[in-house]
Length: 96
Image (cartoon, one colour):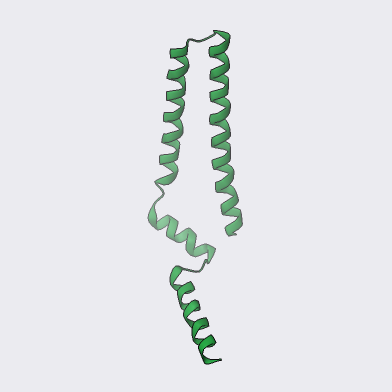
């Protein structure tokens, strides 16, 4: 389940980056062809950055409780669980 969530997040990030690159490339092409001015190209790039930043902020403003619930459902070990296991392993190694 955790791989699925990870893959979904990575796909979203990848598609956002790809979209930004393609849009920037298209704006550059329009400027080179003279269909828009350099200033218009800069303005479009700035607007594109704002849209990307806003979408990043929207995805990072996930409710803490919702995130905790998702993590619990994934049944991932906590930092404390891992530390407890390390302690148990260390104790077992000392006794042998």
